[in-house]
Image (cartoon, helix red, strand yellow):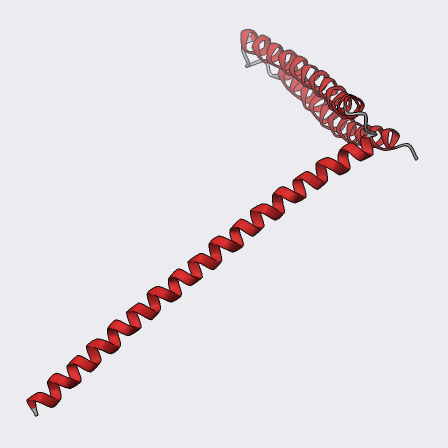
Length: 153
């Protein structure tokens, strides 16, 4: 299978997941708006200006949701373009590009891990040297106390 097609299918899968999740949330929001509209219609005690403000708020929310969906769809296209354009610019297939990026990240992770191991080793060595020095001081003090005890006796 063509690596570009695989990458496109992966991006399309995530786009479909987002679209389905968004549509479900949008359905719930629309249902909530319908219920609020019915409650406001029956609430004679609620001021007309308040009803108007709530309806404007609901319309603004719908617009923001649609703008958000449009923005994410644009970003999916950008991501798809980045993979394809970068791979084409480097003269690589998308699969090779992703493999090289993965290899670079693994190298960085390995270097970080080696650095951590070196720091831990130095810390352990330093702690051991400090403990040895402290033990030597305690021994010297114990010997000095014994000498003083022997001289007094």
